Length: 483
Image (cartoon, rainbow, N blue to C red; front, side):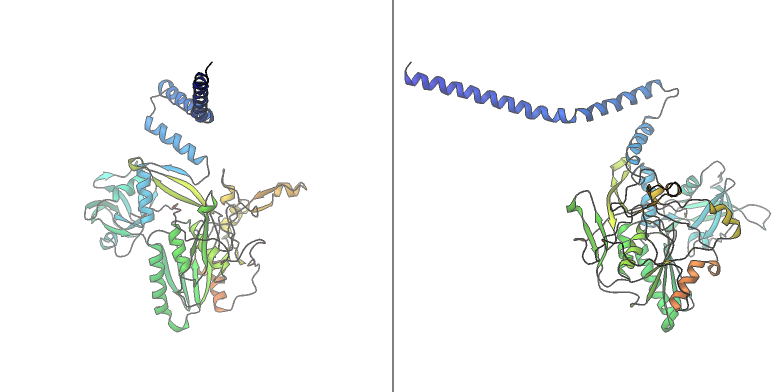
């Protein structure tokens, strides 16, 4: 064979071999993805099979939309107690709650024996101007009976576009016959902050963290400073039974009392998702003493505020252990299909403490004095906190664990996560044990505290040492019934 023929056939053979090798590699590359995802596709096929079987064979014809919504919500709620699907209506309601304003009448209501009862009209709103009073019963809306409606349905009917009228039929004690009141809807703002003068102490109660909270806190501080004047001893910030709300509002409220340093750290799945929010110069209280009240109903955003002020030793935390919700939920809109609330990060206090399933321990433990009729009822009730919720995220540092009662009695070392405490608060300020202690603490007349826990756990870093970037996010989880 001539050299030229040999070279030609050798080249052809090598080309064929290279082509075959390329074909095998490409085939393996493209077949790798289906192989890796085959289990996922099998599970999706299973879901489709079950869905079709339910649609065709259930004893009654099911609502397809409801089936899908419940399937999505089941997937999300299985992750943790705070991830969920929101239908378009629930998403709109959540936006109203976090925005803190809506078109309505300006009354807080409750349901009593199937009738809507006015708790109180909100000052300077259409309801108060129309003369509605506490304990009024609303029986009809635009001549349609309320009986049979839920409280949420009745509230939705009373809300509506600004400048539109609605006629309420009222039954009032002392009047023989029902009467009609015509009210024109206006913009109603939910005041998340209630403030008052306690002689030489400024009292500020924050009930939720919506878009109005920070502005309301600033206004309250300014007004209280004017009303009390030079004799001002300090501030009580009451966060008891505050379920949380917007993360950025918690950061802004914390910043009102801090000059510098970290406020909160949020840590996602990956290290690069770690963010840090920092305080800016300017303490609205000019460094005066602050007492923060918390209890088992203080959760999420309210724990961020308490934790930040505690770590910086800017405030003394008084009360009982908080709820222990240390996760951040992000609202992800789905267009016309509502939204999902998804847990995307954990938050940590400035000294890098996670309070997830643990809570904030007060510096001074003060139990609220219970009335006699509640003592026996609550004696055997276990505090309900984050750690008691099924499927809750675990505390990453494990410091939330305590020996369980059953294990201790059996001489075993089994441990369980604990958080929360009692959430009772007396309605009358003079009977409010925690408030009265806070007032005497600020005035310097308090007795020796019965308990103290102001030292951060071992391993915690300084507020300035943790985190790296500014933070933003939302943890909406509030519900109100004003309209």
